[in-house]
Amino acid sequence: MSRFRGGTARPTAFTKSYDGPPLFCKHCGIRPFGRGYVEQIGGDYVAIMLSTLDDATPEELIAAPVRVANGRDNAWWVEAAETRHL
Image (cartoon, rainbow, N blue to C red; front, side, top):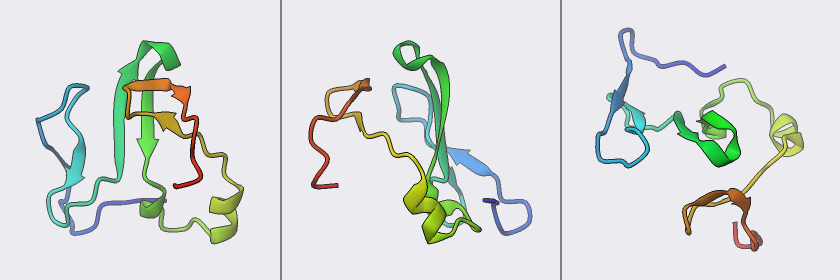
C-alpha cells in the first residue's frame, strides 16, 4: 500500500501538461501515480509508480505483468518495438 507521509500531505498538481496535470508530493517531489484518458486504450487510466508501493516484495514485482507503451511517438496504445534497453 502506498500512502503520503507527513500528516496533511496531499498530491500537488504541476499544470504544464497536455493530458492533465501530473501529481506529485509537495513535500518530497515524488510522482506516485498518474491518471488520464486515452480513448485508444479504453478511456480513463491510472498508472502507479511501482517504486512507491510500500509492501510489494521483489518477487511480486518480478511476477507483475509489464506493458511498455510507445510514449516517444505519443502512441500509448502501441507496444514499444524495442525494450531491451529499459
